[in-house]
Length: 207
Length: 207
DNA sequence: CAAAGTTAAACAAACATTTAATTTAATCAA
DNA sequence: TTGATTAAATTAAATGTTTGTTTAACTTTG
View 1 (cartoon, rainbow over the protein chains, first blue to last red):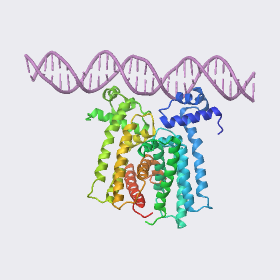
View 2: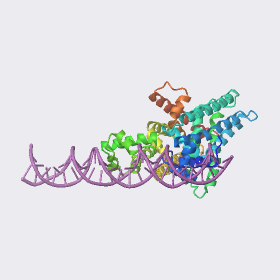
View 3: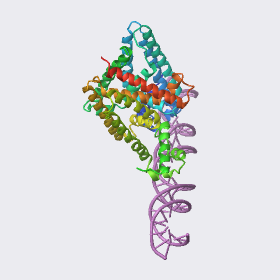
View 4: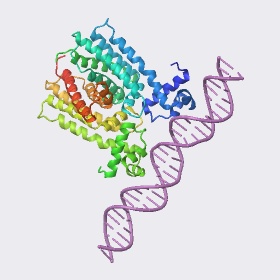
């Protein structure tokens, strides 16, 4: 998929608006205005509003599992180093693409947006790779036996929750004098450190 | 707030539809049809669609912090028992009221639904009570010093994530032959057990 | 000169809310 | 118990917007 500049503007505008107002809360007029294009260009290039959100998913969803496999199959690194890198990378990925991950969260919640098969397929592949990695580490005597599916739920759930409620978080933690950029960096480091420590407590320490 | 039967029908129908289709994805006609009342009754009783969702929040939000304080301030139980009961109760609460918690998740994500102050106030009170409890347990020498805010994020984030993606979860875990009720019971026990073990690993065991 | 890009305008359908008319229920003097 | 009075509840219809999409005319590009 090669998109021209106008198509990219539309995709970016739609991603931003779908994230903050939801799919149904965003009109194609809103998108056209944000992207600074004529309304008809959206139908012209993408066919419909539905197909536009599909295009956003297809554009975003594939690179993650490539990166994931790259990290976990890097046998030059120890199991623990690879696991740390998994957490770091995923935290950065979600925190640096909040719009898309908000849309993804909402699409999972909502039953009437037609990208569920796309999401499920991706979930399955990601989960299989992580489970394989943890099992390998277990057989190598490095990791304890753990409930991988629940651990992945904690990883995704915690990061999504902090990302999606970061301004509540900011006020609750008394970080209101931080700029958006400072808050962002603070949260990335904070979540990564905490999650790595948390998971090591069940992966490495004795029961 | 005492509601008559017709108002309760409207609130229940709205909660169900807002949960599955979102606020903007649900029309007042949908709600009226689901509740089997005339469209005009919604404006008549609640004023507008906005005030209807506010009424849902106000109806639901208050009982939780009462129950929470009740659990954590029960000094007849040990710190560990109280913590276990906190996790059990919250898991049950979310899993048994999925519609409301889906609406809450989406409202936190969305910036254009006007219940954010309501949610923030509730978040703050809940967080303060839990932090107070953990600090008390730390001073008593039972708990390690932990990042309470992150721990609460993991609690809420993990449960919300499993609840909101439970049908993905069902397929990924190969539990497709379970009925909805069986899946529900399986998940409640599964999440509770896992989360209690996870948190104890950082609250109790040595670093 | 033909294909692709771009536009303002038009389209019907769906939207939230209001209206004005009608029915139901409650109150109370006779 | 009646019949009158009044407020609350209920309704179908109408209101004026906004919705996603299409059209037909026009411009640019190769």
